[in-house]
Figure 1 (cartoon, rainbow, N blue to C red):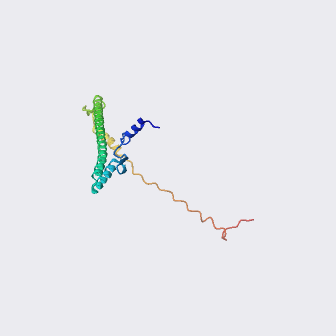
Figure 2 (tube, rainbow, N blue to C red):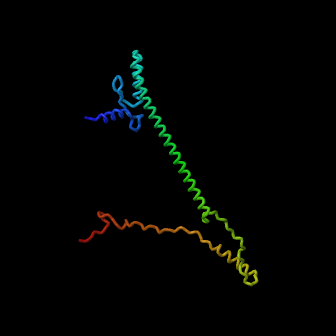
Figure 3 (tube, rainbow, N blue to C red):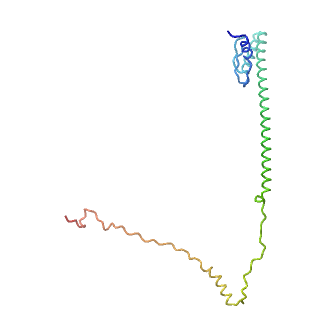
Length: 197
């Protein structure tokens, strides 16, 4: 036989939600007209319908009883929805805090990278280097320039320009050898000599 303690504990926990999602949980409600089964919203709708039916049949006591049952499940549902809303707000707050922390870490990392880039001379912008030194002049040989030497220097300058490659001519191919079909004749032809036996 079961002890009275376990029986009372089971009775107390029968319609109490043990965590989880109360909004979608299926309950068995023992009302005055029998059992009503469904989610809290379905049970509320069913008891409200029964209360309207009782009012139409002028049974005020039954109508009040059904309304009290509906009110019980309405309180249960609203409390569960409040808890869900509080949980959702808490999760949103935690998500915002995590996102803010990630944004702070990203900003700090970017600042460190920017500082490292500024400290690294290879990453710093480099100035353009221009050489303003005069070009070295031709070495003085100490010889006097004559008109003949000018003509020889001009001819030497023109010589590489004149030695341009001539355009390539396309290669010509050898004609194909004619097929030797004329030498071979069919076996039944009388023109061909027959082999001796």
